[in-house]
Image (cartoon, rainbow, N blue to C red):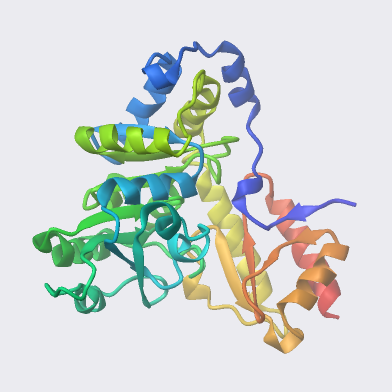
Length: 342
């Protein structure tokens, strides 16, 4: 049975060109800074993000926690959107590893309002932790792939920077945001003191993410990465795939967005499904199936038909388009979803 896997863009497999690049990669010891392929990738990543330096990390989660620990001290407070990845899906790493206190603030469609961030900032009081960092997620996963605009980033920076509060961008899918907004990715990253982006989602590399920032910041982050066991030796094997990802795979994200739009339009026509088309901006769809008996039931029935997806909560389902899913696969998925609904 043909499987259409819409669970996540993390299921993407490396391209043939990536595998060939692995075979030809020049290698060295990256902990000593001697892997030329990794050095090339880090230079490329920093340039793409408009930052001085970059650091390869094993995953987006490791990248976020390395970034937060580099910015903060034990006991500091970090403001983030209440449904953000760093708050919900990183095993409490900021608290467990950094002794950091999360301050979740509800946003609008995943986007924090400047006035709400301003209210959340702690004043000088012996009873309060110090507000040291603001984390912004772009695109916002739980909101359905919503892209945060350059103007929204600038407005948030205007609140925190005069107060000496640093800003970290969880840009796991920041290239998706840039394409959706038809802007250079640097326009989404320039206000952030640090940026993390993933190579292993829509860009199709098998492993890895990048942390970017100033030269001094990355030197500190490199030591934090080592402390967390993230120092790798002949890591150029992985970096070779990341180089291909940055050179070849960014522009093709448009295909994922087009497939997501086609999928959303088909779902919108089906009885019992409610989807807000204005929120369909990138490659993530979140839609309501409360009228069909709840998400677990629908996901289970779709699995039997060869369509894989994930429950977002008890009443919502998430589907994510990716390189492994073609336009024809979208048509097949819609056909099978109709069969389940009949």
